[in-house]
Amino acid sequence: MRLPSKLEIAPGIALWPGALNAATQEELVREVFALADVSPFYRPVMPKSGKPFSVEESNFGSLGWVSTVEGYRYAKEHPLTHAPWPAIPEILLALWDAATGYRAPPECCLVNLYGEGARMGLHQDRDERALDAAVVSVSLGDDALFRIGGDTRKGATRSFPLKSGDVVTFGGPARLAFHGIDRIVYGSSRLIPQGGRLNLTLRRVTPPEA
Ligand code: SIN
Ligand code: FE2
Image (tube, rainbow, N blue to C red; front, side, top):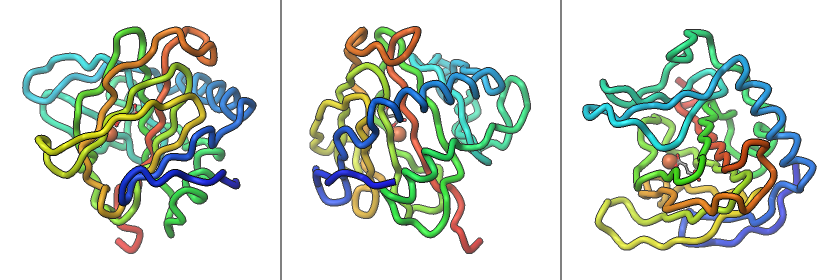
């Protein structure tokens, strides 16, 4: 896969606007919902409080990221069906290679489904041990306002809009940057049959030499 030129938002943070063309976006959406038949979306809850997320989630790959009252963790199985997660679609593996050049493939593709009013509070992606690999984030469907800052919750943040087909990476000095989705513009795209936004986040979890 060849990517168009990227915008350096800040050290370690890159944006490829329109990295995936319309046909590739449609193909990915089809694949995600086909895989969701075997690996259904479910609504995770926050550690301790048990408060439900506003997004629904599923995973692809050997390790899925899950959140329960006990905390965050990587799990080999879907928490409700106890089946292994399906494999990460080829298009995403090719995208990972093109965007990161990392020496090993991603182990997790977290799938976030945003319906009307869903958002994602500021957080760090820090449950991985391979912190030398960047995080790759793909947007599909409705527009969203993405926010990203530094390594502390209180630091300055900046926000920028993400559109369907955009790809963001954060790695190196920004690998542990706090980030989230302030809001989506519900109904701004017709890509997803039931409406809303899909985010696919690719991560390497374990160091390749381990
Ligand atoms: C996330 O950080 O888990 C999701 C980001 C996004 O939806 O773009
Ligand atoms: Fe995240």
